[in-house]
Amino acid sequence: MHQLDWIVLLLTIGGIVLYGSWKGREAKHSLKGFLLADRELPWYHILLSVMATQASAITFLSVPGQAYTDGMRFVQFYLGLPIAMIVLSVTFIPQYYQLKIFTAYQFLEERFDSKTRILTSFLFLIPRALSTGVTIAAPSIILSTLLGWDLTWTNCVTAAVVTFYCIFGGSKTISYTQLLQMGVVLAGMVIAAIYIIQALPQEIGMKESLQLAGKMGKINLIDWKFDINNRYTIWSGIIGGFFLQLSYFGTDQSQVGRYLTGQTANESKKGLLLNGFLKIPMQFFILLVGILVFVFYQFNQAPLFFNKTTELSWNTAKGHEVIDQENKQIFTQKKQTESALIQAISQEETAKIPVLKSQIMDLHEKQVKVKEKAVELLKSQDLKAESQDTNYIFLRFIVDHLPIGLVGFLIAMILLASMGSMASAFGSLTSTVMVDIYQRFINPHASNEHYWWSSKLVTLAWGIFCLVVAQFSVNMGSLIEVVNILGSWFYGTILGVFLCAFYLPKTQGTQVFWAALIAEAFVIYAWKIDLMAFLWLNVLGCVLVVTLAFLFQGISRLSKAKP
Image (tube, rainbow, N blue to C red; front, top):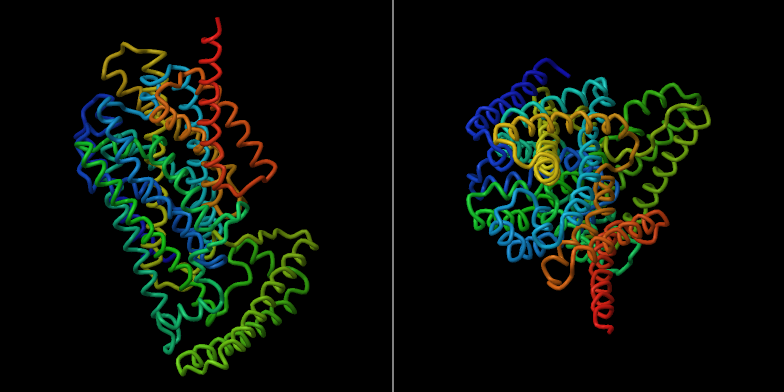
């Protein structure tokens, strides 16, 4: 990177971290101050903090790449979100505020018993700790590959900065930091989109870009086919996505901890409802940026491998020149055909359009086969070949094509997105250990000052643990999918426990406890045998817990009724 990029990067991140730390000093030295920011935050803090928690660096690295390779259909993943936010605002939030709880799992002991609370806490801690490690690793893997940064040191520095300001000011620092982080992130994506459009050929504007992408099957927003093995359809999004989002926002402490900082239940409801209705347009826009990058590379030859490490290996492979030449010829021919298609569309030459579209798709298939040949050549010579490029596409475009200064700003954007999500995760892991385990079972009568200092130590411990996980999070494919798959293993089961608590008033703790254990085992087995697409695992886990708990309740009632 250029010196100016480093200056922009350090000033942007440093300024935001210092501002958040300065505001966090106002929090009281107590568990309430450290974990819930003294419950003093307004709705817009809730909104941006919740969005920053969900929108990690994975979102801004992997999602544009997802659109580049797979089109816009990933947006269906979020279609169940607004419905989930309405349900949460009507049911979960009033109960949480009425009981004045610190974590969602406190509610379960009030409703059931301590073992159900502990089980659900551990079901949360496992995926949250592992996915936080992936969140740390996501930008580090890609930055180290494209910019030559040392992977270990990038992980360490990122984790250390976030751990520092989480320890320093707790939840209030996290919230104020996220407020500015989301501003920078959204500004960065808008700037990137504007620059891409300006960098396209003069005759290609936004309208022409969407027309070309549509003809190539990239504007595939809605898939109405009901297929339980298809990851992204309107049905998996509305049904599976609803269960996942309801569980994530209603029972995952990384989100519950954000909106429990609200001044009142109404402030939390406002923040959550607005998030539900703003998240889909935001995700649509991020995917659209990926589509624009795709269009850009229709007129500017893309690297055969976006991963620079693989590209370096490719440049040393024997015989790579022949494949490079073939790839260049196909690109040139495809570019000419795409220009002809744009012209045919603008002049309404309807007879030409299907013919040109067919030619473009044939050439696209040839490009795919050339890529496969290149991967085979690398593997045949025992050279490193990571063919999964999804996570590298957007950042490689930034590094190769954006002007000096703007590169530093957009890399800062990616790191800030990662830091915002990590901070909420650290806060949630700390609050769950402190409130649901340490304060409840280990040291229930300590002073506020003791809990305040203990929270800082627990945050440090989680920072170290997640850093260790990050070191092993490599070559996982699309990281946005990795995180969501990880969540889908557990979130359905957790949601089922909470739905039993809210909607099955006669169920008891032991019944729900065993229902959750059996359901979780079956969900993991279903994933292992690839029974269904991962979004449906959330539905499976939830339905199994509720059904089994209801069944156990009936069996218990019958056994008591016998003389």
